[in-house]
Amino acid sequence: MALQQARVSQAIVCIRLKQIPSLPTTEDLLYVLAIATQNKKPAEIPFTNPYNSVQFVIRVAPATRQLAPRWTFERCDGEGIIQLWTRESSEVIMIQGKIKIEANYTGAASADEAGVEAQKSSESQPIIMGSPAISATNLPFMGMMQDQAEGAPAATASETQKRGKGSTWLFSDGNSGPVGMPPPVALGSNVVNNYLFALLNPATGLTRHSAFEFFLLRDFEYVRNYGGKMSLAVFDFVNVETRERADLPGAATAALADILNDWCTPLEVCTQLKSGEFAILLCGYDGEKALKFAQQLWDRLLKHSFDLTVCSDPRALAIGVACIPETCKEPGVLIAAAIKAKDLARESQCHYMLFPLF
Image (cartoon, rainbow, N blue to C red):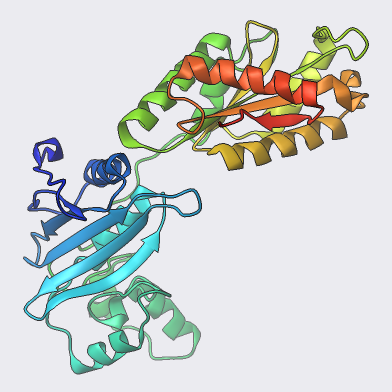
């Protein structure tokens, strides 16, 4: 369902989107998070689980400088609204998976189940609806293996046939909902590394400049449409005496590429800018986290000063950091701001600096 057609009221404290007749998708959750972030107030989606006709509400409060987005999951029944859990997380897929499991509530819990649920704390651990014997922490197949290991009577042939070899089903026959997970699609474990290697510039050992621009613009589109943050770290080396940018020889450039490729993950794209500076794109980093990354980068490069003779004098290296949306709102400005922060860091002898926010 297109949530863009939802009617939003600005007059209420919490923005309530139009109810949807199914479990929220990843797109739905990203959209409600974007609405909350854009309006700087909580937003929520009421929905009905089509498997059991129980109504729920998922609400999210926008992230702050100190806290990740805060999600609250509630169930609606005849007794009113029951809060099931509250979580602080930027991982929308994790929230979606948690909703899928815990929305399969039948409304017919036994007295024993009610006692177990009453002992659970919604702030300390998730509440698993239904029988504890089929909760996510005690799958039937795993329970059978444990029973046999502890000397309990082995499962009957009918039970074994029902569970299936290697079964991971979460729901009993009395519960509506999925019975088992399908086998995973086979994925090549080296696909990412192979494609990243194909995007490397053989002259530098780092990501090609054109590929770097693609990742920069792609991450920017994600941040602009769905919220979040991204940062850029730019650094270079200068001749301490002349203050002119040092051109790294081939061996030094190869050593630098080995250091960065060994340390950075595929989410941290490294390249050499056309101006001769080096840049690292930091997907999901806010200013504080990016500045900490710059500090770690400084320490690591100086630690390898034997391979990078240009680092023999710490004054030769300077790192600048800028962030979207903290520093600016455009990718071109992001690069310029990071370069300017690098120059300011060298002038003030701070070694690394986040672009100053006035």
